[in-house]
Image 1 (tube, one colour):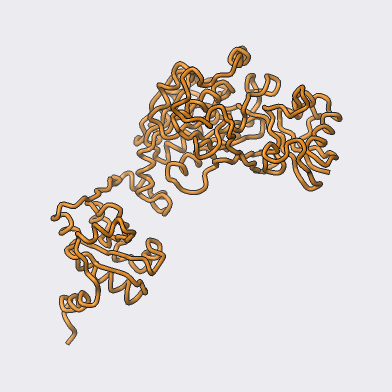
Image 2 (image 1 turned 60 degrees about the vertical axis):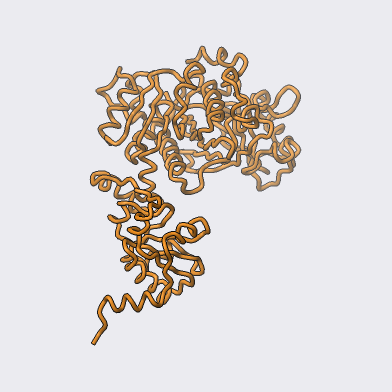
Length: 393
Length: 92
C-alpha cells in the first residue's frame, strides 16, 4: 500500500534540514537567499523582508532565475512549513542545490514571534489589466510598475518634446507628472505638439496637457506650473521630483536647470532638436557629467539658433521625446544602461544614430563642487547672456 | 583624407555640406584646412588665440579631442571628426 501524504511528508522532513525562524532572521544578513514558495495571493498578504517570491508551482522553471548558483545557501518558507519542505526536497534531490533549508512553522510562526513582515502594495484589478503588458516583462513586473506609479517626473515644457514624452509617461503609469509651461496652444504648434488639439487653441498648454493626460490615464496626478522657469522659481518647483525632462528652447534656462539640478542631485534627461537632427543625453549629477561639463559656455548668437524661430520636422520631437521617455522609465526602474556620459545624435534624413562620449570635467564650475556649496546667486549665471538672448524670445 | 561631420548651424558656412573631407595629420591641421577653404567657419571654430572656441566640441570618432591631445591629436585617413556646438531647440 502506498504511504499517506502525511507519512511522505514526515519522510521528507527527516531527509532535509529545517531551521527555526530565529536562525533565518540571523541568516538574512549573512547572504542567504530566502525564498517564499507560497501562491501570489499569500505573498501579497505579507512576506519576510528581502525574500524573493518563487511559487512552489513554478519552482522547477523559475528557481534558476532567482538563484542561479547551486552552491548558494537557500532558505525556503511557506505558510506553515510543509510546502517549503517538499520544495526543499525538489531543489536538493531533483535540481542539485547543495545548501537548502526549510523554515519550520512558516510565516505563521515568523509572525507569532513578532518579526517584521513586508506587505507589498498591490495593483488593483483595473491597474493589472491596464499595465498587463508591463507586468509580463521581468524588467518591470508589479514591483517596477509600482515604482513607476510612485515616480514624480517634471517636464519642462508641454511643447514639441514634452508632448510625446508626457503622453507616453502618462500611459506607462508614471504617477505624478509636473508640467512647467507659460504658453498657450497655437495652431502652428499642432504640427508636432500632439498632446494638444485644434479645439484647444488659445488654452494654456498646462491645462490642455492635463486634460489629455487625465483622459488617457486617471492614475496620473498632474501638477501644473503656468510659469516661465526662472531663477526666481526654479528652487520652488524642482525639489521633490525624481527626474527632470528638459526640452528647453534656450541656453540661459538650460544652464539654470543644470545648476539647480546638480545642487538638488536630480537627474535630467535632456534633448535638443533642430531641423532634421536631435541630440539626447542623461545628466545624472555626480554619477556622470553635467551640462556644463559638455558645454562649458553657451555659443554666440549666430551659433545659437534656438534664440530665433527655426524649422523642425514635426516627427523629430516625437522621436527624440520618446527616447527621453524611454530614458526616464529606465532610470525609474533602474534597468539597462542609461545614456549617462554619452551624447546620442540622431539624423532623421540620413536615418543614422551616432554617439560621442561625454566626460566629467574635473574643473567644472558646478559639479566639481559639493552640492551645498552651490549658492542661489550662482544658479544659471552667465554674465550678460540673459540680456544677449532675451531679445529673441 | 579624414571625414569631418558638419553640424546644422555650420552648414551655411560650408555651402550646405553635411560632411567634408580634408587633408591633414592632426585635428588642428584638418580644421585649419576647413577654415581656409570656408572662411566663414574661421571665427566659429577658432578663438582669437588660435585655440578651439570653448563652445565648440570636437570629437575624434567618439572621443572629445580635449581629453586626447587637443588640436595636436593625430588623425588617420579612416577617422571621422565630429564638430558639435550646443543646441537648445525644444519646447516651443
